[in-house]
Image (tube, rainbow, N blue to C red):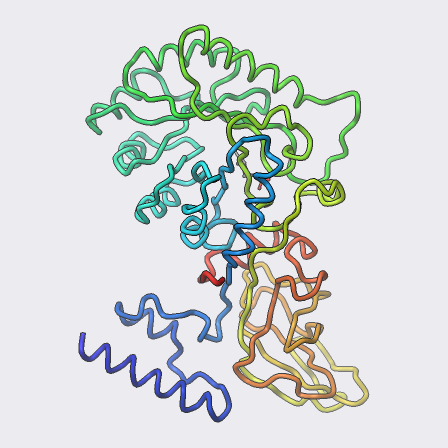
Length: 413
Ligand SMILES: Cc1ncc(COP(=O)(O)O)c(C=O)c1O
């Protein structure tokens, strides 16, 4: 312990010393130290050259409040699959956990549910996807609420409940038309009765999912399968009521359908992208119904600044064609999917274009005729600094899943 502490103090001194001179963090970087020293496992990723995500508690909360003010009394169930849409599932779950309007959290992979369960959150975690019997037992032991899909019968849930030693908390996932996953609506009422009669489950919720895709599918006025889905869901709920079964928290809408089907808000709105601060569609943004702003920024630090003389090469493919040469900043914004080459980033108050991008570790930023950044300066890859670099403007799926996924995440005010 003592030697770790000494190591940390030495590192701090080194950082302070050099920061005074040129704001250059010393190697080994914090991330290297963190990987090698358990005591530093929570080292601040902001001191590293590697990219990190900063999530603003204030903005996430104001997004949640804005959604709640229009949700007709329904609570918010944040969907924090895929590492909380890249923001860091643990970071955002801890923030949401103190918000009274938040009902609980939805994830889709057992490992995501286990990760959240370890945080000791006050609100329930729902795994809304099928899990194996073994995983279901472990998840139920950890207090995770399980989705009941077609494979789940009185026999399978009884086996889980026996192993856990108590009835398990479940949400019935009713398939009202997507024909993808869940208990088909035609048999869902019956299945609810059988599951309830088994004594092995506590029904804490009943859910369905719209066929509405997240993207911009134009809605033809005549064909709205979602309306039929709502009717089917209502039928299942009525059958449950008749049988004396409490459906628990009823939830159906995701970010896009929130703007289209207020009649389906029920007890909770199950939203992924919207609370992060991106509208799911252009119509949703234009509707002016919910006021949100990007709650996070993805940043990294300049690792090198170089002068590229006129006509010299820069990056792998590019011959630099500026007649007067340019300053170039190297950032380690590594992205397995690559950054679109036509985008810009924010450097010390300037929007600057990229010179080299792609599925590689390095990205080169064209600083222009003046060296407007030095080693260690922050570069904002996405954030609110300029409307053209918000996650929404950049294209959510690409940015949030590919680049930001599993980046270290820190909470800021
Ligand atoms: C069942 C379910 N509900 C809600 C959502 C959230 O979707 P969105 O990000 O469009 O709000 C998802 C996301 O995948 C989902 O799978």
